[in-house]
Structure formats: structure tokens, C-alpha cells
Length: 357
Length: 269
Ligand SMILES: Cc1cc2nc3c(=O)[nH]c(=O)nc-3n(C[C@H](O)[C@H](O)[C@H](O)COP(=O)(O)OP(=O)(O)OC[C@H]3O[C@@H](n4cnc5c(N)ncnc54)[C@H](O)[C@@H]3O)c2cc1C
Ligand code: SF4
Ligand code: SF4
Ligand code: FES
Image (cartoon, rainbow over the protein chains, first blue to last red):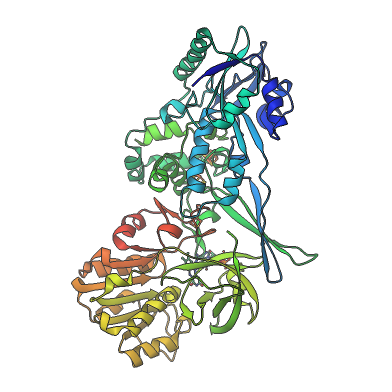
């Protein structure tokens, strides 16, 4: 695929906005990188770097022009493809109305290769089965994806183990690799839409030096994974480890806080909230994110099936790394490391897996 | 995930806390179902729960029996004739009646587990020549919680099906057996190696019954069980019904015991 060089992202952002996309990109806010709507490249977090370890995330600012010199932020694409809350139906008297929110045209700028892999997982979950979700499809098709290949993996990243990064190979409209001295981006298109947008910008073809520098960024990143997982045979051995004493060990540390499932880019579980308007009696159903760490998740005949922390931690880890294959023919984990960073007590899935094996 | 409006055509209180509703679509046709399948019934403003289909009435509607145990089931039980509720489905796998052709049939129900088995027995009574000996065994907490008492009497008296009921806690009038439903297996006649069993009830009842059937020589692949799990969507979306690799709403609720046994054997799976 032909590669080009952009000196600035300003024309790209302007082009996407002129095509009716709201551009959502990383911004530094409240000590973390969040994905929010931006209007110019000036909104991007120039000089930001993160430090991620189990249970810890710190953002700092440094000199220099680099805008993507950090790893996965707590926001994946999930928030945009599967909103944390969505109204499904309203019912008044005998009439049931399906609520069809318009899918916003979003250009996600700066999502990571692991997040693209997570989108592929979501596509399988929401579109690949017997009951495809039309609302998901609408939102998904309205996305324009500009990924940025990772230069500095976080201390909790293990995308190399999961085969999802640090360089994106598919699933994007445009892929950027950020280069320093001079500051520039090597850009490749991965779709017709991407070719079209790129064609509207004035860009120069990437020279051999640019390409070599971009390759070097990805090569070095791959050598600096914070963590690793041995996935060999995991679909078989992990479910068979259901009686391991290790589960009660991890359960003694786990708070069942649900953080890991909330930041996970592929956890899809939901529950429903029902209400009736006092003014006109309209009943409404809202679907919202749920987690297998809650007690009422498995409630049956007056008590939860998974009443112990052990049972709940085992469900999360086993589903993510093993039974997901049975259900969807792929791993539920993309190696982004968010569950490790955002666990308040620093439980590390890679360490738990190594000990369970 | 959008229910269709269904009107309550009739409402029959079955027991103190159990109501049988017949439901017909407000407009359009009622989708056909396979016995064992369930629908998601929506009580407006309260919630939506899985309820098995217990029968079909002409020209097109479902018979469903609901026990009031919590907010949604209570709201549904309190609905009146003519009220409109929401319904999605039918969903899930059904009982494979064709696999039982030519074999003795044992239908085993714990409590409300008889609800999804009722259409199975209806089939046995409609086409008795297709099957061998047919028995229905039912376990309930008390005599007052046995559902479909008229059906049970009719199947026994009118159709030559061996119907046996046992209770945990008898009242003064009870003259039948007391104890676990598995004990009734001693009282019925079936040739284990030529038997198909349909089992539904709480997990513990399913396990005890299936273990006993298999011990007597019934093939686990000929022992169909209907599993119950927490369900919020019925279509493989909400994740609540997972049992190891299975989504009980999609891969079940009816599975054969060779599939269920290793999963039910793991604590808190
Ligand atoms: C495939 C399937 C078929 C079913 N068929 C029938 C049927 O034909 N008739 C029928 O009456 N019920 C049936 N159930 C059970 C029914 O779905 C539950 O009783 C119902 O979900 C309880 O919801 P609720 O809001 O009324 O109670 P909640 O407010 O959710 O809970 C109230 C009480 O009921 C308990 N409870 C919660 N979920 C269940 C459950 N799944 N089963 C039993 N108790 C539960 C709670 O633990 C609590 O103690 C079926 C369940 C499944 C999965
Ligand atoms: S790990 Fe838990 S919350 Fe995440 S998808 Fe699996 S069951 Fe759902
Ligand atoms: S984030 Fe950590 S403490 Fe919270 S539920 Fe997950 S593993 Fe347990
Ligand atoms: S009931 Fe929601 S996934 Fe099965």
C-alpha cells in the first residue's frame, strides 16, 4: 500500500470535519488521556507521556512535538460503538416504539491497534451471530478510524502476545506512524474511504527514510512490551483449571469493583433499567453496561449462581481468555492492559494466568 | 430487542401464586414455536423475564404459566384480561421429540418445571402410537404448588399415561408419595436402554434425576434437560445466562445431559 507523509494533522482534521465527521481524539484532562471531540491539532496532548503499572496511571508533560507518545487510555472505542446507556423502547398504552437514535458520524483519531482489534471482536459479538444488532451496525458504519501505531507501549501492554499490535495491519481507514526530527507522520490508507480522504489532502509520497523510520518505531515498540501472556492451548487448559487454589488467592485481593470489565474494550455485558414516567405513564427501557463481578448478574431462585468472589473472578478471566473462543471463535482479550492499570488493587491478569498454568 | 404488543386473551389463576395467561398478538401473526422454547415477557415499566411456552391455542397465541416470585413476575400475574404487554421470541432450543420416536418416554418435572413440559405431554397424548410407554413424574414442595392438576388427571385417566406426583411437605388430605421426585423412578415402568427422558426443574433436581436415569442405563444423549439461568436479553447479548462456553438462551435452554453434566459439575460456573 502506498504511504505518504503529512507534516501536520491540521489539514486531515479539517478535511474530516468538512465531510461532516465530529473528530474525536485524545486530550489530556484531569490527569488522564480521554477521547473527546477536538477541533484542531492544537487540542492534542503535545508532549504527554504516561506511566502505567498495575493499579497505577500517571500522566506527565515533556518538551517536544510528539502528540501520541503514550499507550492505551481508559477510553477505548467501546463508549462510541456501545454507549454506556441507551434507551431501547418506549411503551405508552398499547403502543411500543423502538427508539432509534441517529448514529453520529465520528472520526476516531488516535485509537490504538489493540482498539481496532477490539472493534473486530465487537463486530463478531454484535453482528456475527443469529441476532445482529442494527443499532450497533449503524454506529459502526458511521465511524471513520484513524489509528496511530504505538511508539511507546505502556507498562501493562501485551498486544504482541495477543497478536494485535503494536502496529495495525487491518481494520482502519487511515494508519499513522508519528516520527520525530522533523516531526511528521507516515500515513497509509486501509480502505476506500481512507484513500478518498487522503486524496483530498496535499501530501508527499513517503521516501525510503520515512518508511524505514516508521518500521523502526514499530520494531522498537514490539520489543518493549510491558507484559506477556503464553496463549498456547489456553482455550483448553484454563477452563480445566477451575479447581485451582489460585482462584481463592486472587479473590482475596479482588474487590469486585467491576473496573476491569468497565475499561475492557470487549466486555459487552448489559442489564436493563425500567421506569415509568409519572407525568404521562410512558414506560421506558434503558440498556446499560453491566459486569459479571456484580452479585445480581447471576441471580437465580433467590441467590447468585456465582456467589463467591472466586467464582466471579474465574468467570471474567475464563470468559475473556478461553470460553470466548467457544462462543465467538476468537480471544476476548486484545492485550491493551487496561484491566491491569485500572484495577484499584493492581491485580494483573498476565500474572494470574502465569500462576494458574 | 423490541417486543411486540400482545393482548391477554384470558387469565386463569392456577394456584395461590401462579397464573396461566393466554396471549395473542395485537396485530400480525403469532410466530410458531418448538416445545421447550421461551419468550421474553415485558411488564411495561417493571421489566422483562423469560417464561416458557406451555401451549398454543388456535388461531394463534401462546399459553404461558407464571409464578409470582419477584417484581416482574408479580406485575405480569396481576395483569387482567384485555391488558397489553410486550413479548419477544420465541427463543432458544426446544425438546427434540423426534429423537424420542419409538422409545419409552419419561417426563420428569420439579415444581414449575412442568410448564415447558406440558407441550411435550400434549404431543404424547396426540400421537401415542409414535412412542413406547409414557410416564410423567412430578415433584413439588406442597400439594398446593402442583401446577396443572386437571391436566395431570386427564393425562392419567384419559390417555393412559402413568402420572405420579410426590411432594416434600404433605398436607392432611395428601395420600400420595412423599419425598424426592427421583424416588418415583421406582414406581414407573420404562426400558432404560430404549428410553428418552425430558427433565426440567431447579439445577439440583435436574442433576439428581439425570444421574439416577443414567445410573439405570438411560443414555445421557437421550436425557434432555432444560436449564434455567438469569436472562436479560434472550438473544446472546447481555451475557447473564453464560454457563461456561454456553449461552443458555441460544445454546439452550434445552441441552442433552452429556453436554450439561460436566458444566453442572463445576461449582459456581
Ligand atoms: C428459560 C427459562 C424459562 C422459564 N420459564 C418460566 C415459566 O414458565 N414460568 C415461571 O414462572 N418462571 C419461569 N422462569 C423463571 C422466571 O424467569 C423468573 O421467575 C423471573 O425471571 C423472576 O423475575 P422477577 O422480576 O419476577 O423476580 P426478581 O425480582 O428478579 O427476583 C425475585 C425473586 O425471584 C428470584 N429469581 C430471579 N430469577 C429467577 C429465575 N430465573 N427463576 C426463579 N426465580 C428467580 C430472585 O432470586 C428473587 O428471589 C423461567 C426462566 C428461564 C431462564
Ligand atoms: S468478562 Fe464478564 S463482563 Fe466481560 S464479557 Fe465476560 S461475562 Fe461479560
Ligand atoms: S478491577 Fe481488580 S478489584 Fe476490581 S473487579 Fe477487576 S480484578 Fe477485581
Ligand atoms: S440471556 Fe442475555 S446472553 Fe443469554
